[in-house]
Length: 350
Length: 215
Image (cartoon, rainbow over all chains, first blue to last red; front, side):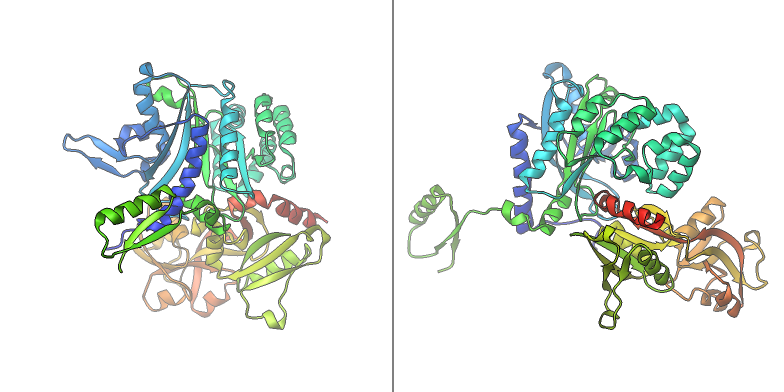
Protein backbone atom coordinates (compact mmCIF):
# COMPACT_ATOMS: atom_id res chain seq x y z
CA UNK A 1 0.00 0.00 0.00
CA UNK A 2 1.30 3.46 -0.85
CA UNK A 3 0.34 6.13 1.67
CA UNK A 4 -0.31 9.67 0.50
CA UNK A 5 2.28 12.29 1.35
CA UNK A 6 5.06 10.04 2.64
CA UNK A 7 8.57 10.43 1.25
CA UNK A 8 11.91 8.74 1.70
CA UNK A 9 15.00 10.79 1.00
CA UNK A 10 17.90 9.02 -0.71
CA UNK A 11 21.55 9.99 -0.07
CA UNK A 12 21.77 12.50 -2.92
CA UNK A 13 18.67 14.31 -1.56
CA UNK A 14 19.89 14.16 2.03
CA UNK A 15 23.28 15.58 0.99
CA UNK A 16 21.48 18.61 -0.47
CA UNK A 17 19.29 19.02 2.60
CA UNK A 18 22.28 18.85 4.93
CA UNK A 19 24.19 21.42 2.87
CA UNK A 20 21.30 23.89 2.77
CA UNK A 21 20.41 23.42 6.44
CA UNK A 22 24.11 23.68 7.35
CA UNK A 23 24.37 27.09 5.66
CA UNK A 24 21.39 28.39 7.63
CA UNK A 25 22.50 26.88 10.93
CA UNK A 26 26.04 28.33 10.56
CA UNK A 27 24.46 31.75 10.09
CA UNK A 28 22.24 31.42 13.17
CA UNK A 29 25.21 30.20 15.23
CA UNK A 30 27.13 33.36 14.20
CA UNK A 31 24.29 35.44 15.65
CA UNK A 32 24.49 33.48 18.93
CA UNK A 33 21.41 31.34 18.53
CA UNK A 34 21.57 28.06 20.47
CA UNK A 35 20.18 24.72 19.31
CA UNK A 36 17.05 23.28 20.86
CA UNK A 37 15.41 19.86 20.41
CA UNK A 38 11.83 19.27 21.47
CA UNK A 39 9.91 16.01 21.33
CA UNK A 40 7.81 15.06 18.34
CA UNK A 41 4.88 14.04 20.56
CA UNK A 42 3.09 16.83 22.42
CA UNK A 43 -0.12 17.22 24.41
CA UNK A 44 -2.94 17.99 22.00
CA UNK A 45 -3.65 20.87 24.34
CA UNK A 46 -0.38 22.55 23.29
CA UNK A 47 -1.54 22.75 19.69
CA UNK A 48 -5.13 23.72 20.48
CA UNK A 49 -4.17 26.35 23.01
CA UNK A 50 -1.71 28.11 20.78
CA UNK A 51 -3.15 27.85 17.32
CA UNK A 52 -6.53 26.33 16.56
CA UNK A 53 -6.04 26.46 12.81
CA UNK A 54 -3.84 23.36 12.94
CA UNK A 55 -6.33 21.26 14.89
CA UNK A 56 -7.76 19.62 11.76
CA UNK A 57 -4.26 18.92 10.46
CA UNK A 58 -3.04 17.16 13.60
CA UNK A 59 -2.22 13.47 13.96
CA UNK A 60 -3.56 12.40 17.36
CA UNK A 61 -3.06 9.30 19.50
CA UNK A 62 -4.74 7.99 22.62
CA UNK A 63 -2.19 6.70 25.15
CA UNK A 64 -2.95 3.92 27.61
CA UNK A 65 -3.99 6.43 30.31
CA UNK A 66 -6.60 7.91 27.97
CA UNK A 67 -4.59 11.10 27.35
CA UNK A 68 -4.61 12.51 23.83
CA UNK A 69 -1.18 13.05 22.36
CA UNK A 70 -0.40 14.70 19.05
CA UNK A 71 2.46 14.94 16.62
CA UNK A 72 3.69 18.53 16.58
CA UNK A 73 2.38 20.61 13.69
CA UNK A 74 4.82 23.47 14.35
CA UNK A 75 7.95 23.97 16.44
CA UNK A 76 7.01 27.34 17.91
CA UNK A 77 4.29 26.01 20.24
CA UNK A 78 6.18 23.06 21.78
CA UNK A 79 9.23 25.29 22.23
CA UNK A 80 7.04 27.90 23.92
CA UNK A 81 5.63 25.29 26.28
CA UNK A 82 9.09 23.90 27.09
CA UNK A 83 10.65 27.32 27.68
CA UNK A 84 7.69 28.67 29.65
CA UNK A 85 7.87 25.61 31.91
CA UNK A 86 11.51 26.31 32.75
CA UNK A 87 11.47 30.10 32.50
CA UNK A 88 12.66 30.53 36.12
CA UNK A 89 15.98 28.82 35.42
CA UNK A 90 16.68 30.47 32.03
CA UNK A 91 18.14 33.84 31.13
CA UNK A 92 16.30 36.07 28.69
CA UNK A 93 16.40 37.14 25.96
CA UNK A 94 16.90 33.61 24.77
CA UNK A 95 17.86 32.92 21.18
CA UNK A 96 17.22 29.43 19.82
CA UNK A 97 17.34 27.63 16.50
CA UNK A 98 15.90 24.30 15.49
CA UNK A 99 16.29 21.77 12.71
CA UNK A 100 13.39 19.33 12.90
CA UNK A 101 10.30 17.96 11.21
CA UNK A 102 6.68 18.86 11.77
CA UNK A 103 3.78 16.57 10.91
CA UNK A 104 0.51 17.51 9.32
CA UNK A 105 -2.38 15.21 8.51
CA UNK A 106 -3.22 17.23 5.44
CA UNK A 107 -0.45 18.82 3.42
CA UNK A 108 -1.02 22.03 1.52
CA UNK A 109 -2.94 21.95 -1.75
CA UNK A 110 0.31 22.09 -3.71
CA UNK A 111 2.37 19.76 -1.53
CA UNK A 112 0.92 16.66 0.08
CA UNK A 113 3.92 15.96 2.33
CA UNK A 114 2.89 14.97 5.83
CA UNK A 115 6.34 15.33 7.34
CA UNK A 116 7.92 18.70 6.64
CA UNK A 117 11.47 19.55 7.58
CA UNK A 118 11.94 23.01 9.00
CA UNK A 119 14.89 25.12 10.06
CA UNK A 120 14.02 28.17 12.07
CA UNK A 121 14.71 30.49 14.97
CA UNK A 122 12.95 31.72 18.08
CA UNK A 123 13.96 35.00 19.75
CA UNK A 124 12.27 34.93 23.15
CA UNK A 125 12.03 37.61 25.82
CA UNK A 126 12.62 40.82 23.86
CA UNK A 127 9.91 43.20 22.74
CA UNK A 128 9.89 44.56 19.18
CA UNK A 129 11.79 47.66 20.22
CA UNK A 130 14.26 45.93 22.55
CA UNK A 131 17.73 44.80 21.42
CA UNK A 132 16.82 45.60 17.81
CA UNK A 133 15.08 42.21 17.92
CA UNK A 134 12.71 42.80 14.97
CA UNK A 135 15.60 44.25 12.96
CA UNK A 136 17.84 41.30 13.78
CA UNK A 137 15.22 38.75 12.74
CA UNK A 138 14.49 40.48 9.44
CA UNK A 139 18.22 40.86 8.82
CA UNK A 140 18.63 37.14 9.49
CA UNK A 141 16.06 36.38 6.79
CA UNK A 142 17.90 38.65 4.35
CA UNK A 143 21.24 37.06 5.27
CA UNK A 144 19.73 33.55 4.99
CA UNK A 145 18.77 34.34 1.40
CA UNK A 146 22.25 35.76 0.74
CA UNK A 147 23.91 32.65 2.19
CA UNK A 148 21.95 30.60 -0.34
CA UNK A 149 22.86 32.98 -3.21
CA UNK A 150 19.20 33.88 -3.77
CA UNK A 151 18.67 37.06 -5.75
CA UNK A 152 15.08 37.18 -7.02
CA UNK A 153 13.39 36.99 -3.66
CA UNK A 154 11.15 39.23 -1.61
CA UNK A 155 10.19 39.51 2.02
CA UNK A 156 6.48 40.36 2.07
CA UNK A 157 5.75 42.02 5.39
CA UNK A 158 2.80 43.51 7.22
CA UNK A 159 1.82 44.70 10.71
CA UNK A 160 -1.06 43.16 12.66
CA UNK A 161 -1.79 46.64 14.02
CA UNK A 162 -3.51 47.33 10.68
CA UNK A 163 -6.10 44.58 11.06
CA UNK A 164 -6.55 45.31 14.76
CA UNK A 165 -7.47 48.88 13.83
CA UNK A 166 -9.83 47.71 11.06
CA UNK A 167 -11.62 45.39 13.51
CA UNK A 168 -11.96 48.30 15.94
CA UNK A 169 -13.26 50.65 13.23
CA UNK A 170 -15.58 48.26 11.36
CA UNK A 171 -16.74 45.85 14.04
CA UNK A 172 -16.27 42.08 13.97
CA UNK A 173 -18.86 41.16 11.35
CA UNK A 174 -17.66 43.48 8.58
CA UNK A 175 -13.96 43.12 9.44
CA UNK A 176 -14.30 39.32 9.44
CA UNK A 177 -15.89 39.51 6.03
CA UNK A 178 -13.09 41.72 4.67
CA UNK A 179 -10.39 39.58 6.27
CA UNK A 180 -11.82 36.33 4.89
CA UNK A 181 -12.25 37.75 1.39
CA UNK A 182 -8.55 38.62 1.29
CA UNK A 183 -7.48 35.43 3.05
CA UNK A 184 -9.28 33.45 0.33
CA UNK A 185 -7.89 35.62 -2.47
CA UNK A 186 -11.32 37.02 -3.34
CA UNK A 187 -10.16 40.53 -4.23
CA UNK A 188 -13.32 41.24 -6.21
CA UNK A 189 -15.65 40.80 -3.24
CA UNK A 190 -13.20 42.79 -1.10
CA UNK A 191 -13.30 45.67 -3.59
CA UNK A 192 -17.11 45.62 -3.58
CA UNK A 193 -17.11 45.72 0.22
CA UNK A 194 -14.59 48.55 0.20
CA UNK A 195 -16.95 50.64 -1.97
CA UNK A 196 -19.25 50.59 1.05
CA UNK A 197 -16.58 50.80 3.77
CA UNK A 198 -14.02 53.24 2.34
CA UNK A 199 -11.50 52.64 5.12
CA UNK A 200 -10.77 49.26 3.50
CA UNK A 201 -9.39 51.05 0.44
CA UNK A 202 -6.37 51.99 2.55
CA UNK A 203 -5.13 48.38 2.51
CA UNK A 204 -6.05 47.29 -1.01
CA UNK A 205 -7.15 49.08 -4.12
CA UNK A 206 -5.60 48.81 -7.58
CA UNK A 207 -4.22 52.35 -7.15
CA UNK A 208 -2.06 51.22 -4.21
CA UNK A 209 -0.29 48.42 -6.05
CA UNK A 210 2.55 50.58 -7.35
CA UNK A 211 3.09 52.58 -4.16
CA UNK A 212 6.41 52.38 -2.34
CA UNK A 213 6.73 51.10 1.23
CA UNK A 214 6.97 54.61 2.67
CA UNK A 215 4.00 55.86 0.64
CA UNK A 216 1.89 52.95 1.89
CA UNK A 217 2.95 53.62 5.49
CA UNK A 218 1.96 57.29 5.14
CA UNK A 219 -1.44 56.38 3.68
CA UNK A 220 -2.17 53.93 6.49
CA UNK A 221 -1.00 56.28 9.22
CA UNK A 222 -3.30 58.96 7.83
CA UNK A 223 -6.34 56.80 7.05
CA UNK A 224 -6.25 54.52 10.10
CA UNK A 225 -4.63 56.90 12.60
CA UNK A 226 -2.00 54.37 13.69
CA UNK A 227 1.67 54.92 14.42
CA UNK A 228 3.87 52.89 12.07
CA UNK A 229 7.15 54.79 12.63
CA UNK A 230 9.12 51.72 13.82
CA UNK A 231 7.65 49.62 11.04
CA UNK A 232 8.65 52.27 8.50
CA UNK A 233 12.27 52.07 9.68
CA UNK A 234 12.18 48.29 9.54
CA UNK A 235 10.88 48.05 5.98
CA UNK A 236 13.49 50.51 4.77
CA UNK A 237 16.52 48.34 5.58
CA UNK A 238 16.46 46.59 2.20
CA UNK A 239 14.70 46.96 -1.13
CA UNK A 240 13.92 43.24 -0.88
CA UNK A 241 11.35 44.05 1.80
CA UNK A 242 7.90 44.81 0.42
CA UNK A 243 5.09 46.09 2.59
CA UNK A 244 1.90 44.18 1.75
CA UNK A 245 -0.94 45.84 3.70
CA UNK A 246 -3.54 43.38 2.34
CA UNK A 247 -1.72 40.33 3.73
CA UNK A 248 -3.78 38.42 6.32
CA UNK A 249 -1.71 37.28 9.30
CA UNK A 250 -3.22 34.75 11.69
CA UNK A 251 -4.64 37.21 14.22
CA UNK A 252 -4.96 34.53 16.91
CA UNK A 253 -1.19 34.11 16.94
CA UNK A 254 0.59 37.19 15.61
CA UNK A 255 0.75 40.47 17.51
CA UNK A 256 3.28 42.56 15.56
CA UNK A 257 5.06 42.12 12.27
CA UNK A 258 4.26 39.13 10.07
CA UNK A 259 6.27 38.12 7.02
CA UNK A 260 6.78 35.56 4.27
CA UNK A 261 9.75 34.94 1.99
CA UNK A 262 8.82 34.55 -1.66
CA UNK A 263 11.04 33.54 -4.57
CA UNK A 264 10.23 34.66 -8.10
CA UNK A 265 8.69 31.90 -10.23
CA UNK A 266 8.08 29.66 -7.20
CA UNK A 267 4.40 29.25 -6.50
CA UNK A 268 4.61 29.21 -2.72
CA UNK A 269 6.46 30.99 0.10
CA UNK A 270 9.61 29.30 1.40
CA UNK A 271 9.63 30.79 4.89
CA UNK A 272 7.17 32.46 7.22
CA UNK A 273 7.20 34.04 10.64
CA UNK A 274 6.33 36.96 12.81
CA UNK A 275 5.97 38.35 16.30
CA UNK A 276 3.76 36.53 18.81
CA UNK A 277 4.01 38.39 22.12
CA UNK A 278 0.91 36.72 23.62
CA UNK A 279 1.76 33.10 22.83
CA UNK A 280 3.71 32.49 26.05
CA UNK A 281 0.80 33.82 28.12
CA UNK A 282 -1.14 30.68 27.17
CA UNK A 283 1.65 28.71 28.87
CA UNK A 284 1.69 30.92 31.97
CA UNK A 285 4.57 33.30 31.18
CA UNK A 286 4.72 36.86 29.94
CA UNK A 287 7.46 36.57 27.34
CA UNK A 288 7.40 38.44 24.04
CA UNK A 289 8.76 36.42 21.12
CA UNK A 290 9.47 36.48 17.41
CA UNK A 291 10.61 33.78 15.02
CA UNK A 292 10.46 32.22 11.61
CA UNK A 293 10.78 28.85 9.88
CA UNK A 294 12.14 27.85 6.50
CA UNK A 295 10.29 24.97 4.78
CA UNK A 296 13.30 22.92 3.69
CA UNK A 297 11.78 20.83 0.83
CA UNK A 298 10.26 23.94 -0.78
CA UNK A 299 13.54 25.80 -0.34
CA UNK A 300 15.53 22.98 -1.93
CA UNK A 301 13.12 22.69 -4.82
CA UNK A 302 13.43 26.44 -5.44
CA UNK A 303 17.23 26.33 -5.25
CA UNK A 304 17.25 23.40 -7.71
CA UNK A 305 15.00 25.31 -10.13
CA UNK A 306 17.41 28.24 -9.95
CA UNK A 307 20.47 25.99 -10.48
CA UNK A 308 21.89 27.12 -7.14
CA UNK A 309 22.07 23.76 -5.39
CA UNK A 310 25.40 22.64 -6.85
CA UNK A 311 27.11 25.79 -5.54
CA UNK A 312 25.87 24.98 -2.05
CA UNK A 313 26.33 21.21 -2.11
CA UNK A 314 30.12 20.96 -2.15
CA UNK A 315 31.35 17.46 -1.59
CA UNK A 316 34.90 16.50 -0.65
CA UNK A 317 36.85 14.26 -3.02
CA UNK A 318 36.36 10.51 -2.61
CA UNK A 319 39.39 8.15 -2.82
CA UNK A 320 38.94 4.48 -3.63
CA UNK A 321 41.15 2.02 -1.72
CA UNK A 322 41.21 -1.38 -3.44
CA UNK A 323 40.75 -4.63 -1.59
CA UNK A 324 44.25 -6.15 -1.91
CA UNK A 325 46.82 -8.33 -0.20
CA UNK A 326 47.44 -5.52 2.29
CA UNK A 327 46.49 -6.12 5.91
CA UNK A 328 43.56 -4.23 7.51
CA UNK A 329 46.06 -2.25 9.58
CA UNK A 330 47.82 -1.05 6.41
CA UNK A 331 44.55 -0.14 4.70
CA UNK A 332 43.37 1.66 7.83
CA UNK A 333 46.62 3.69 7.98
CA UNK A 334 46.18 4.60 4.33
CA UNK A 335 42.60 5.70 5.01
CA UNK A 336 43.68 7.87 7.95
CA UNK A 337 46.21 9.56 5.65
CA UNK A 338 43.43 10.46 3.21
CA UNK A 339 41.18 11.69 6.05
CA UNK A 340 43.95 14.11 7.12
CA UNK A 341 43.87 15.60 3.62
CA UNK A 342 40.13 16.11 3.93
CA UNK A 343 39.24 13.31 1.53
CA UNK A 344 36.61 10.60 1.83
CA UNK A 345 37.52 6.93 1.53
CA UNK A 346 35.70 4.03 -0.08
CA UNK A 347 37.09 0.50 0.15
CA UNK A 348 36.10 -1.43 -2.95
CA UNK A 349 36.76 -4.56 -4.98
CA UNK A 350 40.20 -5.32 -6.49
CA UNK B 1 12.75 41.16 -19.89
CA UNK B 2 10.38 39.88 -17.27
CA UNK B 3 8.64 36.65 -18.18
CA UNK B 4 4.90 36.40 -17.50
CA UNK B 5 3.09 33.12 -18.08
CA UNK B 6 -0.68 33.19 -18.55
CA UNK B 7 -2.85 30.06 -18.65
CA UNK B 8 -5.87 30.36 -20.93
CA UNK B 9 -8.81 28.05 -21.12
CA UNK B 10 -9.04 26.33 -24.51
CA UNK B 11 -12.45 26.06 -26.15
CA UNK B 12 -15.32 28.51 -26.05
CA UNK B 13 -13.73 30.99 -23.66
CA UNK B 14 -10.44 31.35 -25.56
CA UNK B 15 -11.71 33.98 -28.00
CA UNK B 16 -12.76 36.32 -25.19
CA UNK B 17 -9.40 35.93 -23.45
CA UNK B 18 -7.52 36.62 -26.69
CA UNK B 19 -9.65 39.74 -27.22
CA UNK B 20 -9.01 40.89 -23.64
CA UNK B 21 -5.25 40.88 -24.16
CA UNK B 22 -5.45 42.20 -27.72
CA UNK B 23 -7.39 45.22 -26.49
CA UNK B 24 -4.51 45.92 -24.11
CA UNK B 25 -1.76 45.47 -26.68
CA UNK B 26 -0.70 41.85 -26.25
CA UNK B 27 -1.60 39.57 -29.15
CA UNK B 28 -1.48 35.81 -29.15
CA UNK B 29 0.93 34.61 -31.85
CA UNK B 30 -1.34 32.15 -33.62
CA UNK B 31 0.25 31.86 -37.07
CA UNK B 32 0.04 28.63 -39.08
CA UNK B 33 3.37 27.29 -37.80
CA UNK B 34 2.13 27.62 -34.21
CA UNK B 35 -1.40 26.35 -34.68
CA UNK B 36 -0.97 23.14 -32.70
CA UNK B 37 1.47 24.47 -30.10
CA UNK B 38 0.18 24.66 -26.56
CA UNK B 39 2.60 27.41 -25.56
CA UNK B 40 2.23 30.52 -27.68
CA UNK B 41 4.16 33.77 -27.58
CA UNK B 42 2.47 37.04 -26.78
CA UNK B 43 3.28 39.72 -29.36
CA UNK B 44 3.47 43.04 -27.56
CA UNK B 45 2.04 45.96 -29.53
CA UNK B 46 1.60 48.32 -26.57
CA UNK B 47 4.91 49.97 -25.49
CA UNK B 48 3.70 49.79 -21.87
CA UNK B 49 4.42 46.04 -22.00
CA UNK B 50 7.70 46.21 -23.93
CA UNK B 51 9.68 44.91 -20.93
CA UNK B 52 7.56 41.75 -20.65
CA UNK B 53 8.08 38.43 -22.35
CA UNK B 54 4.50 37.15 -22.33
CA UNK B 55 3.76 33.49 -22.89
CA UNK B 56 0.29 31.93 -23.14
CA UNK B 57 -0.32 28.35 -22.01
CA UNK B 58 -3.39 26.79 -23.62
CA UNK B 59 -4.89 24.28 -21.20
CA UNK B 60 -8.19 22.60 -20.39
CA UNK B 61 -10.52 24.91 -18.44
CA UNK B 62 -10.45 22.84 -15.25
CA UNK B 63 -6.64 22.81 -15.39
CA UNK B 64 -6.23 26.61 -15.40
CA UNK B 65 -6.51 26.96 -11.58
CA UNK B 66 -4.14 24.00 -11.18
CA UNK B 67 -1.41 25.61 -13.30
CA UNK B 68 -1.88 28.92 -11.49
CA UNK B 69 -2.02 27.47 -7.97
CA UNK B 70 1.22 25.55 -8.50
CA UNK B 71 2.94 28.60 -9.98
CA UNK B 72 3.43 27.00 -13.42
CA UNK B 73 1.46 30.01 -14.69
CA UNK B 74 1.51 33.46 -13.06
CA UNK B 75 -1.99 34.40 -14.20
CA UNK B 76 -4.94 32.57 -15.71
CA UNK B 77 -8.27 33.30 -17.32
CA UNK B 78 -11.12 30.92 -16.62
CA UNK B 79 -14.76 30.85 -15.56
CA UNK B 80 -15.54 31.69 -11.94
CA UNK B 81 -17.39 28.35 -11.69
CA UNK B 82 -14.16 26.47 -12.41
CA UNK B 83 -12.14 28.61 -9.97
CA UNK B 84 -14.60 28.06 -7.12
CA UNK B 85 -15.04 24.36 -7.80
CA UNK B 86 -11.27 23.81 -7.88
CA UNK B 87 -10.89 25.28 -4.35
CA UNK B 88 -7.44 26.41 -5.53
CA UNK B 89 -5.55 28.95 -3.44
CA UNK B 90 -5.40 31.71 -6.03
CA UNK B 91 -6.18 35.43 -6.14
CA UNK B 92 -9.37 36.29 -8.05
CA UNK B 93 -8.60 39.72 -9.46
CA UNK B 94 -10.91 40.80 -12.27
CA UNK B 95 -14.35 39.95 -13.63
CA UNK B 96 -13.82 40.10 -17.39
CA UNK B 97 -17.53 40.36 -18.19
CA UNK B 98 -17.64 37.77 -20.96
CA UNK B 99 -18.51 34.09 -21.11
CA UNK B 100 -21.78 34.77 -19.30
CA UNK B 101 -23.62 31.61 -18.25
CA UNK B 102 -25.46 30.07 -15.29
CA UNK B 103 -24.60 27.04 -13.23
CA UNK B 104 -27.94 25.24 -13.07
CA UNK B 105 -29.62 22.17 -11.69
CA UNK B 106 -31.23 20.54 -14.75
CA UNK B 107 -33.76 17.77 -15.13
CA UNK B 108 -35.37 15.83 -17.96
CA UNK B 109 -38.28 18.05 -19.07
CA UNK B 110 -41.23 17.48 -16.76
CA UNK B 111 -39.51 15.08 -14.35
CA UNK B 112 -38.84 17.61 -11.55
CA UNK B 113 -39.98 21.22 -11.38
CA UNK B 114 -37.88 22.29 -8.39
CA UNK B 115 -35.20 21.15 -5.91
CA UNK B 116 -37.97 20.34 -3.42
CA UNK B 117 -39.30 17.62 -5.74
CA UNK B 118 -36.00 15.72 -5.94
CA UNK B 119 -35.99 12.19 -4.47
CA UNK B 120 -33.96 11.36 -1.33
CA UNK B 121 -30.38 10.56 -2.17
CA UNK B 122 -30.82 11.96 -5.66
CA UNK B 123 -28.02 11.06 -8.01
CA UNK B 124 -26.40 14.03 -9.69
CA UNK B 125 -23.94 14.10 -12.58
CA UNK B 126 -21.67 17.12 -12.86
CA UNK B 127 -18.23 18.39 -13.75
CA UNK B 128 -18.47 20.65 -10.66
CA UNK B 129 -18.50 18.21 -7.71
CA UNK B 130 -17.40 20.68 -5.02
CA UNK B 131 -19.86 23.44 -5.91
CA UNK B 132 -22.61 20.81 -6.21
CA UNK B 133 -21.78 19.30 -2.83
CA UNK B 134 -21.70 22.75 -1.21
CA UNK B 135 -25.06 23.67 -2.76
CA UNK B 136 -26.85 20.58 -1.41
CA UNK B 137 -25.03 20.54 1.93
CA UNK B 138 -26.21 24.11 2.62
CA UNK B 139 -29.78 22.91 2.04
CA UNK B 140 -29.32 19.85 4.24
CA UNK B 141 -30.06 17.49 1.36
CA UNK B 142 -28.23 14.19 1.05
CA UNK B 143 -27.29 13.43 -2.54
CA UNK B 144 -24.91 11.23 -4.47
CA UNK B 145 -22.60 13.17 -6.74
CA UNK B 146 -21.07 11.48 -9.76
CA UNK B 147 -18.18 13.39 -11.32
CA UNK B 148 -18.10 13.35 -15.12
CA UNK B 149 -15.62 14.97 -17.47
CA UNK B 150 -18.02 16.01 -20.24
CA UNK B 151 -21.33 15.35 -22.06
CA UNK B 152 -23.09 15.55 -18.71
CA UNK B 153 -26.50 15.81 -20.45
CA UNK B 154 -26.27 12.12 -21.27
CA UNK B 155 -26.36 11.02 -17.61
CA UNK B 156 -30.13 11.37 -16.89
CA UNK B 157 -31.00 10.12 -20.39
CA UNK B 158 -29.25 6.84 -19.62
CA UNK B 159 -30.54 6.60 -16.02
CA UNK B 160 -27.03 7.11 -14.67
CA UNK B 161 -28.39 9.97 -12.57
CA UNK B 162 -31.67 11.73 -11.70
CA UNK B 163 -30.48 15.20 -12.59
CA UNK B 164 -27.36 17.13 -13.64
CA UNK B 165 -25.63 20.31 -12.55
CA UNK B 166 -24.06 22.06 -15.49
CA UNK B 167 -23.40 25.40 -17.15
CA UNK B 168 -26.19 26.82 -19.24
CA UNK B 169 -25.46 29.62 -21.70
CA UNK B 170 -28.18 29.58 -24.36
CA UNK B 171 -29.95 26.42 -23.18
CA UNK B 172 -29.84 25.02 -26.74
CA UNK B 173 -27.88 21.83 -25.90
CA UNK B 174 -30.16 21.15 -22.94
CA UNK B 175 -33.28 21.56 -25.05
CA UNK B 176 -31.96 19.37 -27.85
CA UNK B 177 -31.44 16.62 -25.28
CA UNK B 178 -34.84 17.02 -23.67
CA UNK B 179 -33.56 18.70 -20.48
CA UNK B 180 -34.49 21.95 -18.74
CA UNK B 181 -33.00 24.06 -15.92
CA UNK B 182 -35.00 23.89 -12.69
CA UNK B 183 -32.76 25.99 -10.42
CA UNK B 184 -29.94 28.50 -10.95
CA UNK B 185 -27.08 28.08 -8.46
CA UNK B 186 -24.93 30.99 -9.62
CA UNK B 187 -24.16 33.30 -12.52
CA UNK B 188 -20.65 32.93 -13.95
CA UNK B 189 -18.29 34.92 -16.15
CA UNK B 190 -14.61 34.66 -17.06
CA UNK B 191 -12.20 35.90 -14.41
CA UNK B 192 -8.54 36.82 -14.21
CA UNK B 193 -6.80 34.85 -11.47
CA UNK B 194 -3.21 34.92 -10.18
CA UNK B 195 -0.85 32.82 -8.14
CA UNK B 196 -0.55 34.68 -4.79
CA UNK B 197 3.24 34.55 -4.81
CA UNK B 198 3.63 35.42 -8.51
CA UNK B 199 1.18 38.30 -8.04
CA UNK B 200 3.66 39.99 -5.69
CA UNK B 201 6.34 39.93 -8.41
CA UNK B 202 3.94 40.90 -11.21
CA UNK B 203 1.83 43.62 -9.62
CA UNK B 204 3.12 46.14 -12.13
CA UNK B 205 1.99 43.94 -15.03
CA UNK B 206 -1.46 43.62 -13.46
CA UNK B 207 -1.69 47.36 -12.80
CA UNK B 208 -0.72 48.02 -16.43
CA UNK B 209 -3.38 45.61 -17.66
CA UNK B 210 -5.95 47.62 -15.74
CA UNK B 211 -4.58 50.97 -16.87
CA UNK B 212 -4.47 49.82 -20.49
CA UNK B 213 -8.15 48.97 -20.20
CA UNK B 214 -8.91 52.48 -19.01
CA UNK B 215 -7.10 53.98 -22.03
